[in-house]
Image (cartoon, rainbow, N blue to C red; front, side, top):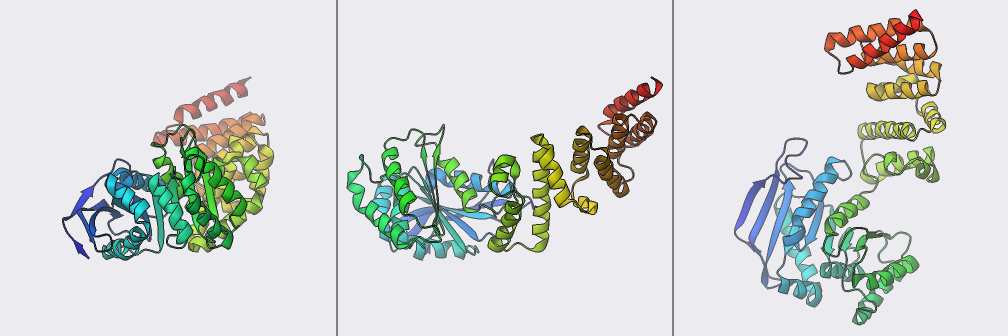
Length: 427
């Protein structure tokens, strides 16, 4: 394979910039193209990776001339939110005439180009690939459907935005390919594959094909075939690509992030099994992603914190108390929770007049950090609410004195609490 005009460009994407380790983003722009023997033409590609990256996931973006930067931005955002691992992105740029030729007239040759020429090129840049995900919009999305039907294991994940054409009243000539897809489903050849596809709320004429495709998936898709369809509100046929990329990658890596209950709410959490769901979720992600014990422990703490704060946010004391009793039967477990959050736990106990439980947390925090002005002030609040105004004044005064030493940003608040407890003592 011959490559030419290969230019390495260091860029800072508005959404990417430098990563958390300070590594810059690198784009290799093969602007002259890969001189493909399979396709007998030059194919322009762009490759995004981070310097020193250990990314083993490659996202292949069809029509990279439009969607390469969207894919990079989406994956950088997801990576920063710890929803996905590091992802390298390769965009295949095609002219309007090439699009029709590659996706509709020569799909087999185009898939062969990806496997036998594009992949070796990517790996020649030092990128080790263990997971391949492919994205396509419109005609490229329809190409993905055909590829999934004929070569379901060619890629680990398929993400299609508004795939067109798909068999329906608007595209009756696509019946043959539609039936081929159905046969592959029925045979179970798509087992262990992943397919995420979208349409816009009003997506003419895609809507007719999507209705048939979704109905077929619901009827014939085997349990081991993971698929998801979304109708994206407030999007158009042209505008849904970024959201499809973002949601599709997040769905493929479902379970990569620690469990975030604030994204579902307590009612949904309880419907899924509550604490048992919590434990199963972390056990499954350990098996799938092979996280080490340190990572799992850190993520478990984040999930516990998220769960309890959600209980506070929803003002659900019964759930809050249940979770606190389950996860912190040993008060020493609180050492892994940030002191600010642990103080929030104590405050919620105080709000619900559970003074002993609030003091249990506060006293532990003061053992961990005897100079915590916030914990001191919270202890004063507990005694104030219990009408032990002498003790309230003592602890509010301690909080103010400590806050003055470090010019604590909540000094004014602590002073108001001290004034209140002193006034109550006089009365």
